[in-house]
Image 1 (cartoon, rainbow, N blue to C red):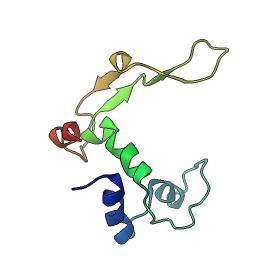
Image 2 (cartoon, rainbow, N blue to C red; image 1 turned 30 degrees about the vertical axis):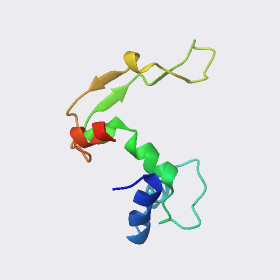
Image 3 (cartoon, one colour; image 1 turned 180 degrees about the vertical axis):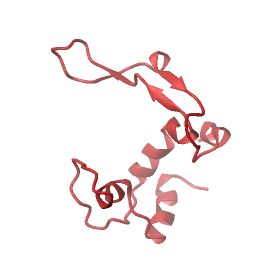
Length: 101
């Protein structure tokens, strides 16, 4: 199949909207600026998608935490502290393929 940069060429060729462009088209607020080319996919976008187990049909809670109610800085929570709920929605990526990635 290829790496993230090779994978990114196909949705770019197909003129598929990037996640930011899609959200903006749906009138959802995003902190990012409107992309110059809404169909130009980057390898970092593909990599982030491929790293998210939520695409296998699960929900992952407690990925981040804060030290206190006064310190609002979010910190990454170790994987062993995540709570995973399987089969909560339709999978986009089958579990076995996700594990290979």
